[in-house]
Length: 136
View 1 (tube, one colour):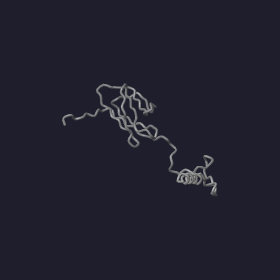
View 2 (cartoon, helix red, strand yellow):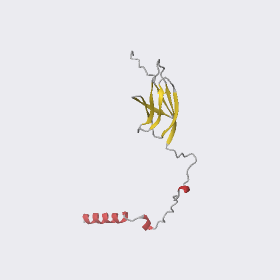
View 3 (tube, one colour):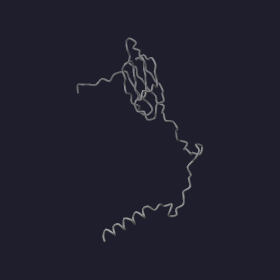
View 4 (cartoon, helix red, strand yellow):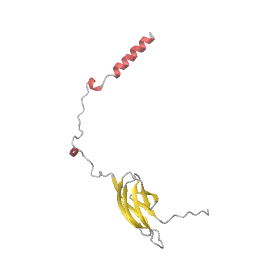
């Protein structure tokens, strides 16, 4: 007897759950989605750009004799953003557009590569080495 009651309750639950709203008498919603690109309303502050302009500051290292090599600045995926022959003793400021998701640039000078973090809209690099005090 208990099994019959359980089976009847399970069947009744399945029947009630399987009813959909549109069969019960709901009204179909009106589709207000734009069908043409010109119908899309976009806030005036929205930017369509997927890139950002950043300023790269390279601080030179004074040398007695000129040290020159090719300076390449690129994104982490290997895309070259800037490439030129550069004298290590010269300061350099350039502006490039990078993908908005980029947080690090690859700076290569000759055969040495450096990771340069992007902070806000700028990236700073110095050929002058940072000397750590080991006496502490």
